[in-house]
Length: 253
Length: 206
Image (cartoon, rainbow over all chains, first blue to last red; front, top):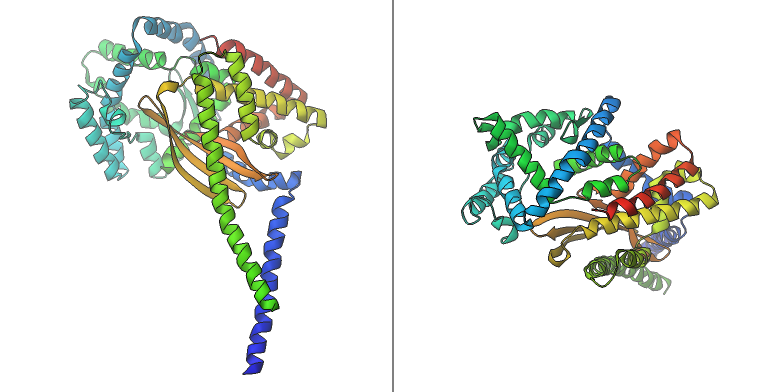
């Protein structure tokens, strides 16, 4: 019996010594990282993030061409119109118009929540739409977000395709619309049928309303595009990468 | 006797580790709240000019970010190795200036009177890395900003931030990788410096 106790003590002691040594080694090595170790410590995470959001860009020269066109359209048409509009239209009115169009996006968000079996998201979208359309006077006031802090559950058909395993396939830079990928560009077609503005009989009126929405939105964020261009060496590359990273996050959610 | 001492040591190490995690959480939380509160206070101050505000941001970011580490990681192992000692200093300075102006530009677009920051989660990535997820709400609309912290030279500080999933490090790494495939490190530094100047002209001329 005494032998057994002695045996256990010796083995426990050995284990304790080993355990303490391991803990000390971990403590020492974590405080003495060299330059290579620093990279090793972070490189995997960054590379993983880059690889998971990297998308092929076989149409890069065409995409860059559309980026150039969009850039010129912004500076020579959209921005001057939006700045003019901003000077005559008070911010509160522009925000209300923005709320109205956001509320009109309910069918798209709700249907895509349902298609992805996000029942709670769809139910919450219905709740937000009901509150904003009634208490918020046809959606002019975003009562759900501003008063109740209920966020929108933004889903589109590109995300629905992603939910069912569709890849981004390839980078696309769309005329007038900017960065996208093939999956999300295809997804815009069914989403178009869920936009109430699409069902207005006159194409002219429908396009004018859409154009008005774009000008109104731009007036609320003048300077953002300029900042993005100023802070990046290759704004086209940044826009495509940022688009993919953002979509990847949305798909994870 | 020896066994008792070792048990006490093991318990002490366990307790230190547990306390360390708790203190890391509160240290990073303090840095986060202090940085954002000071940043918004600088922006709100109507008495100071843009240039003065940028100067104040300089100190704020230096104190709360691992600026050297950010520069190294943005460039990557191969890119960093391609720079000589002088170029590393120049790159770090130029990149920090650009980051500062970018961050300042983003925050200055907010309606500072109506900014609310919600601290969602402060979680451990590893023993020396943590992440704080926040939501910045500004007059109704909200967007997520996640900050990543690391412990380096006994100091917790920010080494990356993700705005709506868009990582500062990953975005710049991708651009720098492409740039260095066709141009030299010296040209990269020159481009960053010229970007910094163009930012001054474009960003404040809205």
